[in-house]
Image (tube, helix red, strand yellow):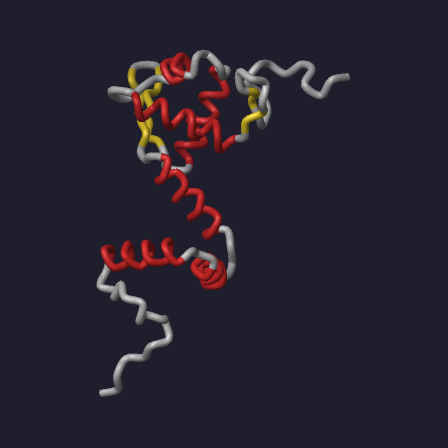
Length: 153
């Protein structure tokens, strides 16, 4: 018996795109977020489904929206008997949420962050230093090594 027998369209972990290629959950989430960002205001799941050219089943769109809600990437509010959805973050924000979830799932955050930072390219390291400088009073120059001690006084 076929493993997919008895399954309705849109059910399962992966969906097929119009070319027959399987799509992962992250790709579907990005597509739904892109559609929501194009919306002039809060949108229903049916509106999102239509903008995806009916490519995904309504239940799949609802599942993706619910997952995005749990991740904080979208917001929803009740409008009559339905919910309307709105993007709370862009693709960069969604990527940052995924990165935080990975970090939150690790027991040794310091080791994970240290490994991440040491693997950065020099350009990305400069960018990160600049962003940290903008977010706080941390010096952005290359002299910051994390091993400096405050002067004794």
